[in-house]
Amino acid sequence: MRKIAVAVMFALIAGPALAQDHVQMYGEEAKEKTATQKADENRAERAYQHSLSNVPDQKPVDPWGTARGDDASKRSAAPAKPTVKPAVKKSSKAKSGSTAD
Image (cartoon, rainbow, N blue to C red):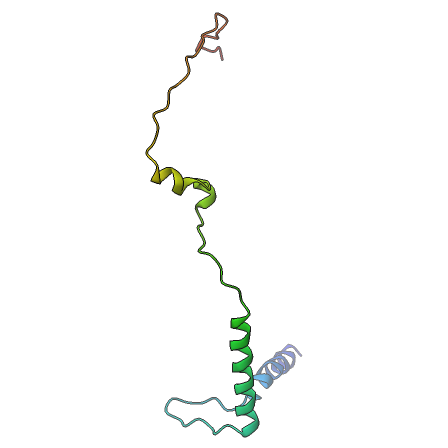
């Protein structure tokens, strides 16, 4: 009974594979297209070109722009100013560096 079930499953799987249309082989001439197929292709090409003309121009994308910040180009053009670090006030209640585990 299992053998029959396996044979039926193989037949069901192989059916769609055999139903495929002719696959063009290397060196084989392509079939001539009908007038409706040519008109459909021309219409699709015109629609594609029209859709491309509807896309607005975009400014260049800078993926690292957020990491650098918006004014990174302004800072690189201007000379860098020396920064002065503020004096750090030490507290008398500072912790020691050692901890007991």
